[in-house]
Image 1 (spheres, rainbow, N blue to C red):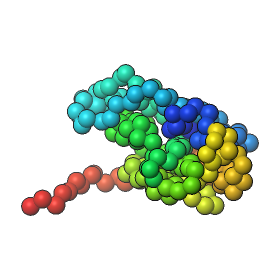
Image 2: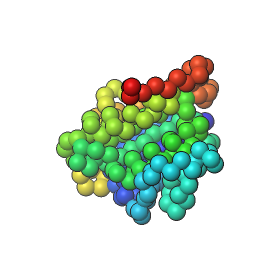
Image 3: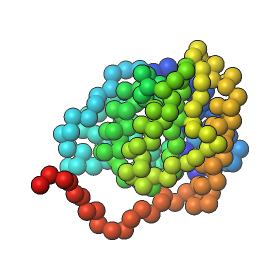
Image 4: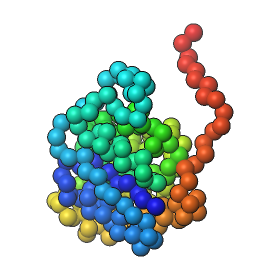
Length: 204
């Protein structure tokens, strides 16, 4: 089994990487492979609602950034962990743009697979970031994996996250729970509903 971890920081080996690496190292103890995919620090497009991905599902119509490259990795992964630094009490905007485009254009690669989010901050805004990251996953029947606390790690300068003992323990506990869920289900995605979707709006 394999877990894809997305480093949503423009700094390739900053504190978000430290947090995700702690998870990856713990997963390895259970014989579960992992890959940390970095979103990079080049421009990323936001979704423009063109709907082209419905005509050619599985990829975003824009193919000039890392979105489709990372999205394709999820097709062979059994679970997902997304990490982001905190910017103004929110996740990195580039990461949000990538997540929204991946989940909309290639939702079948994500649907039903276990997921977890990680927020890394200097001081505040981590809980809002954590909640924002989790919101879309609940719409794809993705079981959100818990830990002993909210998945938050503190650190400012690169590498300082490793000094957050409770944060690192939270990452390891998260990995333990992810491993337990994957092994209990043998990596099978959650079934979700077998009922036809009944969309509804409130405009009369």
